[in-house]
Length: 88
View 1 (tube, rainbow, N blue to C red):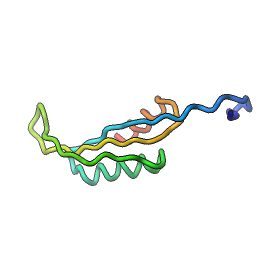
View 2: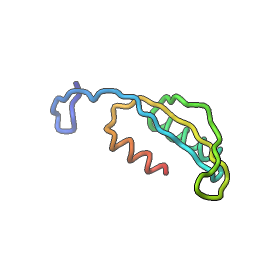
View 3: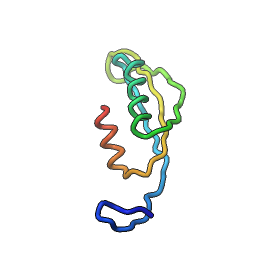
């Protein structure tokens, strides 16, 4: 149980595992490194998949570098999404 800003006692939010895909074809390696560093700073320990390369589909462009990150959080999904959008 935790206390909120008003002093009310509330049940602690459950901890869940969030999985996020990340990828870039514009300066991809530095951008993925930055994304990993920012998510680690914000959410703590991360689990990372191997990085994989995929061709651009539907348009002419450089290959993408992609990975999947996993982390534990008790934050509401909307807060996690807001943080991901901030990094975008």
